[in-house]
Amino acid sequence: MIEIQKTETATKPEGLRVVTDVVCPFCGTLCDDIKVVLDGNRIVDTMNACIIGNEKFKSAQAGHRIMQPLEREDGTTEFTPVSYDYAIEKAAQILASAKRPLYYGWSSTSCEAQEIGNELAEVTGGVTDNTASVCHGPSILAIQTVGAPMCTLGEVKNRADLIIYWGCNPIHAHPRHMSRYTIYPRGFFTERGFDDRTLVVVDPRPTDTAKQADIYIQVEQGKDYELLDALRTVTRGEDIPDVVAGVKKEQIKELAEVAKSKKFGLLFFGMGVTQTTGKHRNIDMAISWTQDMNKYTKFNLIPMRGHYNVTGSGQVMSWQSGFPFAMDFSRGYPRYNPGETAANDILLRHECDAALIIASDPGAHFPVEAMKYYAQIPTIAIDPHYTPTTGISKLVIPSSIIGVEEEGTAYRMDNVPIRCRKVVDAPKGILSDEEILRRILNRVKELKGIPAGQGHH
Image (cartoon, rainbow, N blue to C red; front, side):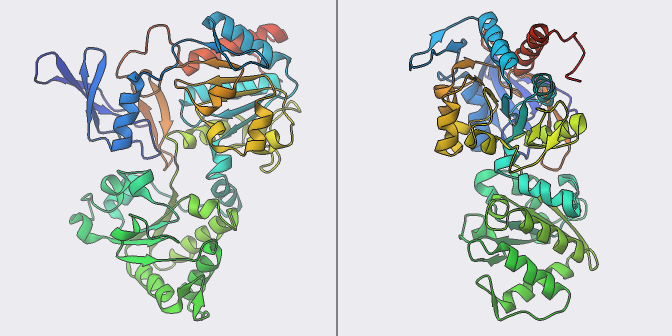
């Protein structure tokens, strides 16, 4: 695990100080070179962070934080302030009495909190799922089928001379990805930085990332599988039709020849591939092409994971119970069947009788029918801020922010664990996700008569 040493240096004007080597808890890039300017316990500014990362730190002290637990009675829209002790007791009673509770989110909190959450799901015989089920779940299914030739972002920076962004727009979603790892930095074997690399973008839309590309391929919407299949065919020296997926044969051949001519190629793929027609079969084909390319040169691929610790959630679930998301403990042992045991499926089929949402906002992203059912059952939301999800939950428990107000471990998109650090104190009285979940878990065990330290089995 990468652990960055904390150093602090005084700056002018008097009274301000700078905390260096801070890890940004926003996206899967997990930039670890952020500097945060403090005036006492107040964040004044950041350096090196992108505009989104800057807002992540500053929003920690914005006026829209939830400052105390809230409860809403059935049939009302007004919340009543309650104490942490009451909220934790209420949450424990809801989860302990439920036959099949749903636990969803986990992608913007620490691995330590995720570990406790998975045990809570096991103890209560519930279903636990992370945001991969609506983003890179198909990537995981494909990797389970055909494996994946992957590497670290450090290798990309130092070795890669061909970068392909397929179905993603890092300039908007991962703003420092190109400057930190892929296109602009000077690496050990890429000493000239930008001049040593070729950028290819495959996307139906001419995005801002596509405007930077040396080669831009405008694939027809939903035809990624066909284009990847054609690319594999051409790479193997076989012929293809004159036009495939809206792309001319000459352009497909050009991409194959460019890829073969490079020393180290990297395919980064996003939700434009995982959540369009074909889903995990698209990724299956992308992985297969990457494997084919290794007959000619060094070639790898990395998924562009969104939330800063969605990768960590999959890792923690896997090493605790064997499966990376959509995990069902309702039979007393872990089962895994995406399409049946993912959060959306459970809600749409009305198969849970309680829910705990943490570190995500399904109210803003899930189908309306799923959230209509969510609003009808006993629900708990753990979140630092007001969101559409907290607005329709029965019980809201505020928490501190990992990487700003609390330490915690997170996994970068390339599966490298990095320790996030505390920069400022949380608002007075606000507990961490880890502390809230631990107290709920301990109380649930008491209610169920399970000795401390013993799981569901």
